[in-house]
Length: 344
Image (cartoon, rainbow, N blue to C red):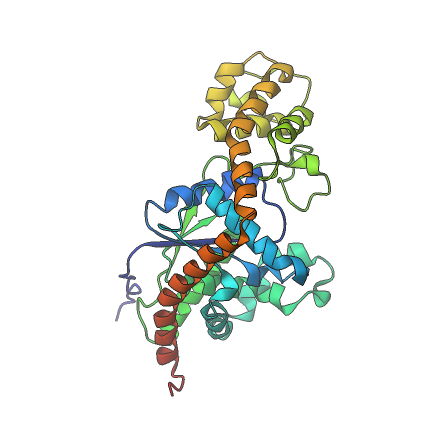
C-alpha cells in the first residue's frame, strides 16, 4: 500500500487579509499591504477585514477602539479598495471567526504554538504575564483565513510562520475528520518591493506605529508639509549615491530611501541609482519629498474626508459584514456537521 497525496481543494480562488486597528497606519503599511490589496481585488475574490479581535491581545482603550476601526476602514477606501468589488468588514462583526477558532484550538497542537516566534518576541521574559489570547492568536488567524476557505494570503516575512500553522491546521482537520480537500492549504502571496520599509530615523528597524518618534514614519494622515519635512529630516550619510546596488551595502538609511523612492515610483532600486548616481542626499531628498507628497498627500486628504462622515464608513462596514457572514455561515455549518455537533 502506498501513501497517497491529500485530496486537493476544488473551490474557487479567494484572498483574505486584515490589519489591526491599534494605531496610525503609515507608509510601510501602504507599500507593504494596502496598495497590494487594491490590486488583488481585481484578480480574485477579496475579503479584507479590520482585525479588532486580534487588537485586544494588547490593551486597547474601549472608548477609542471603534474609531480606530473606522480609521483602518477609511485607509482601505482611500488607498483604492472598492466596497462594490472587495468585501470590507470588521472581524468582530462575524462571530464565525471566534467559533471556528475554538474548533481549531482543539485541532492545533501545543507544540506547534510553542514554536511561534512572534509570541516569544512579544512576550520576552514575562510570558506568564501575557494573555492567553496573545498565545493563541495564530489559531484565530487560521480561523480568519479558513472560515472563508481563502486560498491566498498576502504575507510579510513576520507572518509566514503563522500561515504555515494555518496550513498544518487545515491539513490535520481534513485528515482527522476524514474530510479530504474540505479546507484549502492557503498559499502565501509575497508582497514584493516596498514590503519592508524601515524607520526614517534608523534604517536597521522597520517603520512602526509604536516608535515614540513621529519623525520615524510617514503617517497616512500626514499633510503635504509634514510629509516633506519628515523626508528632509530623514537620517542619511555623507556619501553620494553609487551606480550599483551592491555598493549600497552597509548603508541602511540610504538603502531604505532608495527603496521608498522605487516603491512609490513603480521602478526598481537600480533605476533610481541610475538616475541619481553621483548625487548627494541634498539633491535626492527634495525629489523624494516631492514624490512622496504627490502619492501620499491625496490619500491623507481622502482619509480625512471619509472620517468626517463616520456614518458612511459604518454603512460600508455593515454591508461588508453581511456579505462576510453569508460566506462564512455555510462553511461553519459544514464544520459543525463534520465535527458531529448537535444541530438542533
